[in-house]
Image 1: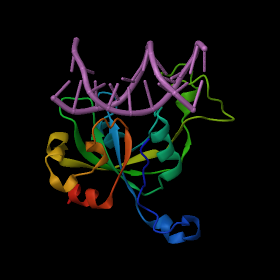
Image 2: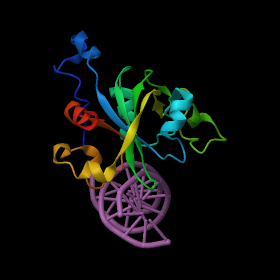
Image 3: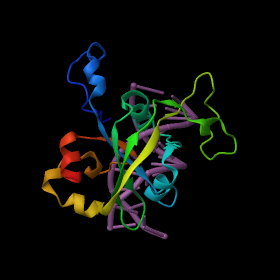
Length: 171
DNA sequence: GCCAACGTTGGC
DNA sequence: GCCAACGTTGGC
């Protein structure tokens, strides 16, 4: 199992370092545009990132994200997979309400309100890219070598992005 | 704890 | 639609 580091904490004891809280971390979050696109986020302004049912992705939202962290919004499972916009983490973690909703496809009978299994954060719109950056283009760039998104077999829908890669992609 | 079977993701 | 890759489940 790969482990991830949001790259935020400079000291081993982050809790003793108040400044660590103010350092932004960067993320990439995938969404199928048929289900929820960057235009949907632009329209809504803000949305709960519900429906995540993968433990690694959940752990990153629950344990590693901070309000203000910035997010590459990525369209997956579509004609042209691409980074299409920028968003921001807008809340701390809380229980994903869809896990308790019997009508939801994300309903989880093994979860309970006392011990919720799935957490989420809210995401808010920052901007849409004038020109999406297709996956195919990202793959061709030597300066993005090692990016989690580009690793073979990667299926995580949420992943950290290093500050270096962030600058190279948006710069 | 092992591991086969199954389900899901997501590019192509 | 195909299929590689990976996560989860459950029998043992």
